[in-house]
Image 1 (cartoon, helix red, strand yellow):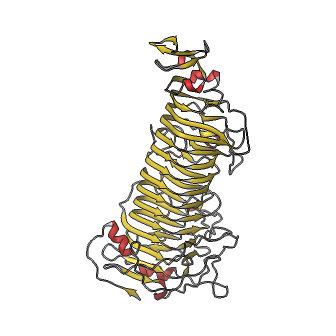
Image 2 (tube, one colour):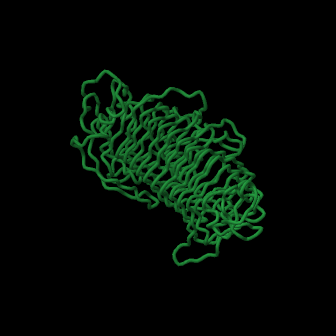
Image 3 (cartoon, helix red, strand yellow):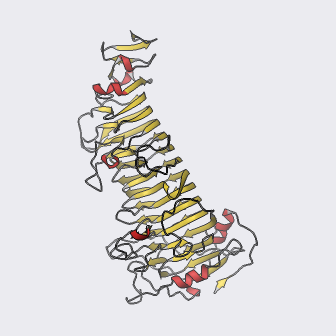
Length: 552
């Protein structure tokens, strides 16, 4: 039976809906005790985020308990078997789908998942105004073998076919919340997908996601655990005003992105999440889905063990259409270990000018080959108080590297020529674990950065190790820099600003910290009024109206 309270007869604002869905408020409705957590068949432990209170009863919301609509709730979330002695569990999806089908703006419904259910796909109302609230550890869903679909999505069974429909962009529904449950995607050993491809059905152009929310505004996901998915843990397409907090994602294998956003998407906040994924932890892929720009994304206080921390794709391959923009992205207070670079900027040459811009990364400590893999045109990027522990780990040995550094373009993105407007580095550290750090900034494929400003950069070695000084601050192997601005660089473990032959690839050197480096510079590259050591006289010098004079 459901608990029905009078409908308000009007649309809810976002906070009202979250209250009515049970994400705000502490009063509990009496419910079952939660189950213990378990290990799935390969020994991976399903994380437990602890018990959670059932939603508060709030006027205007209909509450449906899974146990009261005939759901068997007899599934072991680790194995997908009947938890009362093995054998087949009962598919509870038909009952849940029928009970939730009438959710609308005038009739919002919250499903309380008060046990553990086997499901052959939950297909919720396309326009939203529904929520799923668990009771914490041991409550949630296991995707039935051969489901060949998403675990949870809005719309009918074929709503996500194909996965990338392209334009036109449809209108958005609104108000969906998920909280305090586990989803086991059954992604390995012929689980969810039985099409011959673990990720989905290649013939239909569709992948199978753990949770897939499409064409929606006002989405809240809190304390949801998703494990063992065939493809992405969460896929969001054409969404806005999205909050994801306190979630845990754990899967192995290619295509197991954690939070994957397709264009267009806007106003996204991600906080206090834990990612262990075989692919990008967070992906902002503007050309995918219906395709469109992605704007205003904030990530804070998250942990990562993934292929990359974040992919920011404005173009899918060199010269490809369509081309879009990703802007105003901030990432702060993050830690992690990545196989590739922490951040992958674009995926090819000939992107829009400044196609990725307003990226600010602050107060993060990352173990990876590089902080940023440069592979598309960018506008402004800031690195603030970043520590890179330079590790040459790579998921695929075929992806060779030209070296490690704060920024680079490796063979993984071969031929991805870019034009960058401004890269600023403030109080960052490269901690070396080997001799493989060949430069702080490595430019390839005739790429260029108009302004590279360094206000605080140092090189250190891991405790107990001591490596020779690296060759150069900038390795313009096949690229160029317009203005190199040096305000503060600790040059003790850096031999030179660049190789002597590469000064021709730098237009101008300026900044208050040039002289303090002790490096020698050709007179021709120096800006007027900047003290430096001349490579011609080997003495402190300054250019006044283009004429080199002794300094002071």
